[in-house]
Length: 253
Image (cartoon, rainbow, N blue to C red; front, top):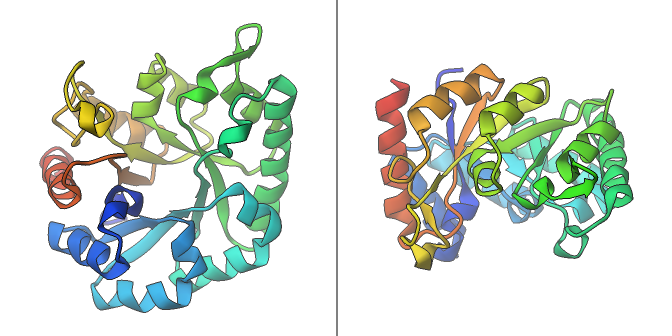
């Protein structure tokens, strides 16, 4: 793979128009992007827009409802956009407080869906936040229950390093534990305490408290093929995209 760096287009959602979003990431220097569900819904429209700007969609997020209700349409969209790595970004808000049985049920369901998608050449993974670190059964967390229930399946993991850190976990310990599932990492940063409050405490990559020189190597060591830049609430999406990429180019070589 010549360039593992991508950017999650959710970072630039406040720009609204997909043309402006794609123009902005192309101008910032990106070659790869990660989509969201709406891009899959409009795959036939988005695909030529990407091509016109020399961009490749190398992965995408997709919601649980679409996976459950429109699997064939999701697979067709992946083919139209030309990628094979798909990730469910989160369970719906009303499900995030589930008990242990609920998280096991989600793990089993995603395992089944992932195997069905694998038969069509699409890899399905789960993307974490911090709520999956809540303990649900003694000391066992929701994320552990989900992966336990998915044992033996092809379900993968897009590790969001900063959300793990926000949840009080050691990202490298978790990556080491589930290295066989990791195919991508979200690359984002956490501002020093009390800073960037208007950005929910997030920071451009390289300007926060996480040691991304070390974490970059760790993510790739533990299996991440795609290193996906993300900022959940940037004050200036275009500047954030540029700043993060410039930093990563400096450490990635």
